Each structure stands twice: as structure tokens, then as C-alpha cells.
Image (spheres, rainbow, N blue to C red):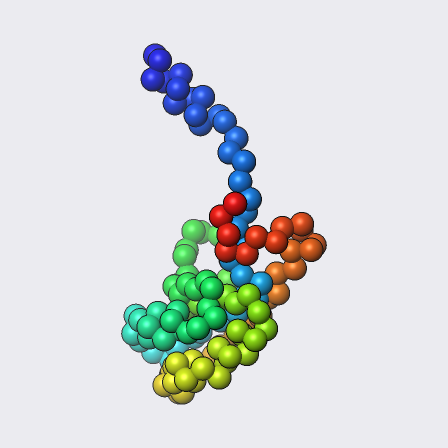
Length: 134
């Protein structure tokens, strides 16, 4: 009974934390491969080359998660995200030899690409904690 009381008290307490904003500049790419069987190799190359470029502060690469929601667009083979905290870091990423190599290697294998650059404007939401755990 005492253990159950502690469990429910612990679960009901609100934790005060600041939401972490991973990056100021968020580069999001959705790739359709000519051969979906190449997905694993492409993801491994992205992990090897993109995540190690100087100035990258956040990164992920993966496939569509199907949770049965008809409003979610899953029409891609690989989605990837690369985050930067400055325009200079993003501009350097674009011309970095690792990025250029990856694009040159895989461009012939793409059926299509959708690329989005999203700027996180903390002044609109009041938060400025990029990648910091407050």
C-alpha cells in the first residue's frame, strides 16, 4: 500500500522542464528511391557522412512510421533531418565534401526529393534553449 502511494504520487507530480529546441535551422529531406531495397544502404551512408559534418548539432535518419493515421503522408522511402544553429554552419554543410559526395553518389538513385528548410523562431514562442537541457 505504501509503495503504491509513492508510485501514484510520483506519477501525479508535474515536472518543471524547458522544452529543448534541437536547432535554429532545420533541414528536412524526404527521399523516394528508385529501388526501395537500397533504403538500408542509403541510411547507413547518411549516418556515416551527414551526422559527422562540422556544425551539425542534431541529426536523424529513418523510415516512415505507420501508426494507422490516414492524415500522415508516408509516401517516401527515407526521411532525414539535419539541424544547425547558424546560417554559416548550414552554408558550410551544403558545400562540405561529405555532403557533396553523398549527393553525387545517391542522386542517380533518387526517384524524387522533397526538401524543406524550417527556421525555428524562438521569439514567437518565448524559448531560446537550442540543444540545452534546462
